Image (cartoon, rainbow, N blue to C red; front, side, top):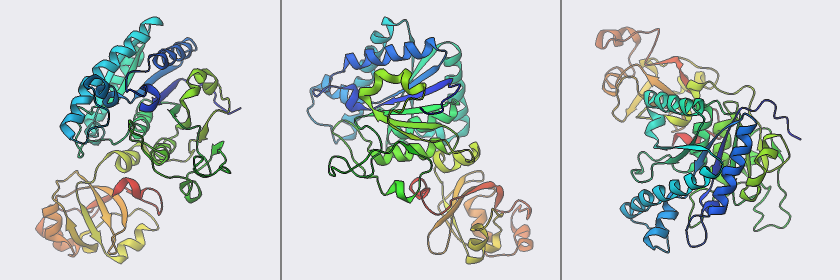
Length: 381
């Protein structure tokens, strides 16, 4: 048994391959199962939210398409049609158990802009207080590459800490994390618990997609990192265990558990790493690099060698070494043009050129997160 005590809120993500049939029509029995399990959780006083996939796939069925369209406009049209059909089916299943649902459609901008993120958080909190189950999906009907979250594994992980979830469960067509690809290697063994995501765990992962979904095990490991770093446990398990949600919430050994990190990162650091897209970059010399490898330090003009991109004061930017490694992300106190005018200069000279304060620097130490060597690179490219 796993030590899940006093769970009050769970986020459930269900993948497209579990929600639609081979002809891309809605798998209604699965939706009924989901609502039945939600009803059981609510009887135990546990809040639940659903991150759903399937809109594009269902739209393909409505429009009579056999393959996922490559044309963006047609894909968005599928999402618009399919999301409406999908919510209609969810509401039909929810009515059986007297469950109220509310639809939330988001894009990455809703996490990128902190004010919008706060509005989203407040809306979700109000839904929970009013006994409404949020049904969340990416707004694929309007999504373009610049504002896409990318996949619903990541979306679920971004939502989990916003609503103070205790547990995130990703249901898919896989039983959990395996030491090797079980479809290729017969000696692959499923991992029960992951205490920490390290190079050994990463070596077990290979990306994949299906004709109806966008995620593979790689995106699920991403989701595990995003959620566990702010104290949220995460489980990967097969959607054939959807009728065992109560057992999962009570700690039975189902799927692979990624344990929440006791000493994770702050919500501000979490936002900078996983939610805020960098608007530009500054390159720093080797002296600054050596300091940042030891601790946070404010970035002064003297140590800056180059400015990339156009950005305003208050933007999140990358701090890069001379050899192109992203050392940190931070919130800049100055625009790109201001930094460019004082780069390489001492602080006294900089003060005579722009409204510069040495104590705060170009990027203040408290407005920075160090990107330790290893896994964060996937999120800051």
